[in-house]
Amino acid sequence: MPMRHAIAETPSSDTPEETASRIELWPGGIAPGSERVAVEQRIVERSDDPALPDRVVTGVTRPYMVVHRPAKPNGAALLVMPGGAYRRIVLDKEGSALVPVFAGQMGYTVFVLRYRLPGEGHDAARDVPLADAQRAMRLIRARASEWGIDPARVAAMGFSAGGHVAASLGTRYDDAVHGPEDPIDALPARPDALLLMYPVIDMGAYAHPLSREKLLGPTPSPADMEAYSLQNRVRAGMPPTFVLHAGDDASVSIDNSLVFVDALRRAGVPHEFHAYAEGGHGFGVRDIGGLSLVLWPTMADAWMRAQWREVPGDAE
Image (cartoon, rainbow, N blue to C red; front, side, top):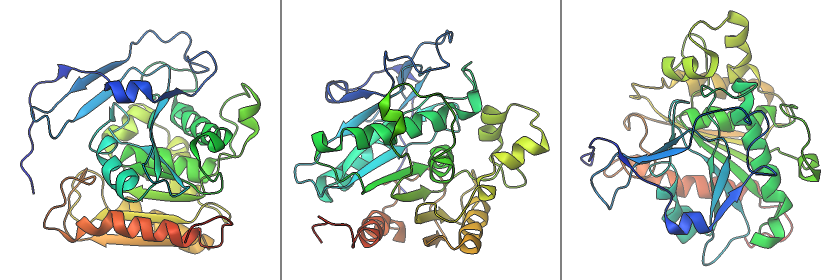
């Protein structure tokens, strides 16, 4: 695996290109339930290699997407929810690093979501990441013609704790976790496809302890752990799902994906599961040289195209 370049965190920001393509989710900017939150958004850089940036963001009260538009769009969109153990959001390894492949080579319009974190004082804190993901999906559909997107080909992709956000969206897309703000909130929030990369799923025996603590607090009740263990939310009619995990993941056990895939099978949800012997955790599209994992973006693209082969207007 490539050597990681890490130094003490230094102040950073969105790039000028990201700032220019920033789409705030909520009317007025500040999200509902975050009006009294005192934290300020902060982006820091954790890498000393300009070629491999590794920024993280905290303190989000004005959630937003950064849209990356391809030179040759394929008409489909990808809403990306990076991970960060629900204590921060990783902007590059599981966000901007995807753009050359998924936008540049494959033609997806890529939206990278900066969602609110549950441990920062928001009202109904456990559901604010889901509320932001629902709103993002609806906003993409509301403005689909502006971006040249087919509103029936919008996938959600999540990594690690962002996989928990994405899986929440894929299973709880019609949960009313906030009141309607405007007509956009009447649009469907169900993704047309769901892709989960080494996801946090379980809040019980297989939980990632830090993600669970940040989401549910230090002493969650059995009922809360059951409710936020997303294998318990799987149901018929949810989006077809692509799941990927490495067996040697020492941070988020592959059992998270296994219990979710078993629930998908029992519910009759179309799905595809890729389990790798090597890869560890947090590899994104960078730390995969020399491993069979290098093929995962190509497989994900082929899988998404297969889901949409009957959609009118598909170029395939």
